[in-house]
Amino acid sequence: MMPPFKMWQQHPILFATGLWVLTTFGLVLMLGDEGIWKGVGFLCTTAPFVQAVVGYINGRKTYR
Amino acid sequence: MTTETLTARGRVHASRFAVSRTFRVGLWLHRWCGLVATPFFLVLCLTGTILIFHEEIDEWTGVDLPVEASERPVRPLADLVAAAHSAEPGKRVIAINLDGDHPERVTVNLGSPGARTFAGAIPVTLDARYGTRLSRPDPRSTVTGFMLTLHANWFLGLPGQLAGGIVALLVVVCLLSGVVIYGPYVRGLAFGAIRRMRGEPLRQRDLHTLIGVATLGWTLLVSVTGIALALGGLALMTWQTTELRRLATTYESAVPGSTSTSASIDTVRASAEAARAGWRATLLIYPGTAFSTDTHFTVLLAGPTGLQKRLFEIALVDARDAHVSEVATLPWYLTAVRISQPLHFGDYGSWPLKLLWSLLAWSTLFITGNGAWLWWTRKRPRRVRATPKSVV
Image (cartoon, rainbow over all chains, first blue to last red; front, side):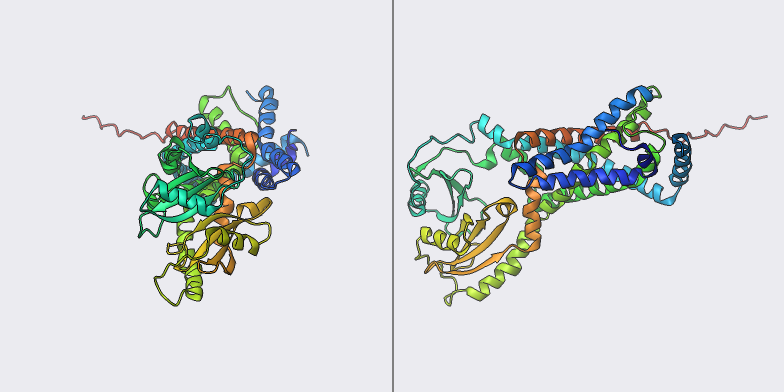
């Protein structure tokens, strides 16, 4: 789940923008009536937060 | 290319950017927009979190009592209007709300004989099957009503609403400038890195950048939709003075000031719904108000599915013969306000979305607080105290 280190290192702002787009896309997708859109939208919306939690857990041993 | 090389190059690039004018302007905007918005944003986040659960709170506090289940069909609207009149004699009907989720509940808004707006109107909620009045308090006097007013306009009406929009605008500027200055703070670190053993300020700054980037999309969306909702009052006024005035001048009665309503309210509803197959009436505004003409009902029709459910079409129905004069779509600015509503309140994904909304709101609240703390405890340039020259 860790983002590719090279990409993250070279384009942190682009990466942040990507997470923002993902959340917005997910929330808009959830406006649909169908259960599938609600599910996919919810996953997209929560992805940045999950990514942050996983990044935090992975970084605990490396960074003190 | 090794990771170390990349890290070193990143640091060099970051240190160059960190002294640039763009960075300094971004930092200034991020800091001051954030600090000015903090106290107001705190209130908005707290009241917003409570409002996420307004349905549950209303149910727990007995405001929104479930109506007894019954197979009995709903009564005609004309009967319900008569029942509302008998409950509040001497008042005139301004509008009728039809709840799509609870068709057994109908709210008739009654005002004083000369009233043209909803200000001071008495909402009478009726059980549509029996025509009996449901004992519901005025939504404005409930806990959630209080919170909504505080959240939406700070009890200051339109000026308060616009002030809320300015706070949201400050938050948007703070977020966008945060993205601009984000790079130098995280270069050389893995995503999610929190340096815990190198002092509290550094740990808090890492938390600020990590939680900030994870909640960026949500906070930006909620702030932008907040601005749109804050402008909702102005948008409605614009619609009244442009589109509604056009409709009024096109279809106005030959006898100015006459508000004859010879057509039955049920026929008016049926005509409006027949004009757009599948769409249902949600609000019927009587003639002679600020939102209708003197001879026409304004009927708001909600779409059948998906996004259409959240949008309206406006049917102008002649009060004399229930003829539909025109069905107008919402102008783009009112469409933007309508779509902003669910995206701001997060009330369209049941419990999982409500919990996520609360989590994101509290995370945002945390970084707002810790940002202020970082500013407060920042290293200030030490002033060199001028030492008095020794007198020889």
